[in-house]
Amino acid sequence: MYNTYIKRFFDFCFAFFGLILLSPIFLIIVLLLFFSNGKNIFFFQKRPGLKGKLFTIVKFKTMNDKKDKSGKLMPDEQRLTTIGILIRKTSLDEIPQLINVIKGEMSMVGPRPLLPEYLDLYTDSQKRRHEVKPGITGWAQINGRNAIDWKTKFEFDIWYVDHQSFILDLKIIYKTLLKVLKSEDINATNSATIERFYGN
Image (cartoon, rainbow, N blue to C red):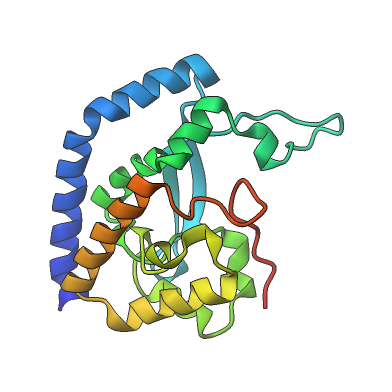
């Protein structure tokens, strides 16, 4: 009952009023990125959602598109802009995903939406993360986020699928806010961004 009807209602309310409250910060970031990146303010990418159905996620663009001599994109840590580092550190790059929540493509709480190319690499158990909508934050995010390994991250995701409730979601949102304020677990160890998943 909660996951089918009630959660959608609270997701919409949280995202709608959250977007209104954060609109001044949203506009400031848009201006900063405009002067830093030009017209490349937002980052769009296909991600699998509920039941693996693809949707387009939207975030603030924190990296430039610099390429090496062979035409390949340079490593993430070399493409992060100064303003991008600040935005990522405070998790403000996630704000546009509130639009995904309003549209019903994401939830406030759930397993983070990963890359489509990972779909064929999951075990049967790991595929269960797509039994619920992906979230802006989740159980894995408050228990290590990008600082934990993939196996542990997926175990946390499946635990959430089996135990989701309104109280648990409130707890996750509260703890997420605390982690954002402390800037904890933003990056993976020895990496500017999360390391790729290559299968089990």
